[in-house]
Length: 147
Image (cartoon, rainbow, N blue to C red):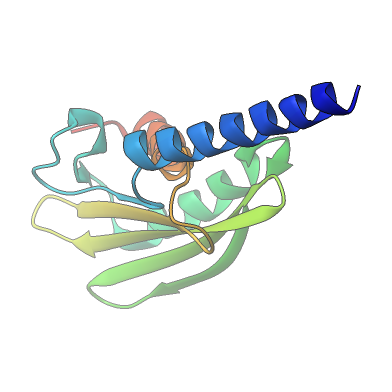
């Protein structure tokens, strides 16, 4: 009986170590962000034909409607000046919280938007921050139309 318990614990520990190694291999970071030339087309910088004031107001309405793991996102702050807007959000992930920032900058045709999400703790997020980006970008694209 004692031998079976020891073997069971050993298998459990080995499985956990394997999961952590796989997580670190396939999701080596706890940060995700959009970029103009991102290798994934869905994570490229967005441009919308709207003004900063409208973008900020509509994004503030969108954020509380989004949820992760059954809990709604929470708007922390929204700042705006003549050339840019910065919206900070907390995203609940089980017992952790991720931080998401949406930065909009005035452009010739409207605004250019970049989004950044990162975990507060840990070295790997199993792709959770990427999912945050996809979720907010989908909502913004639906509201403002993807260009």
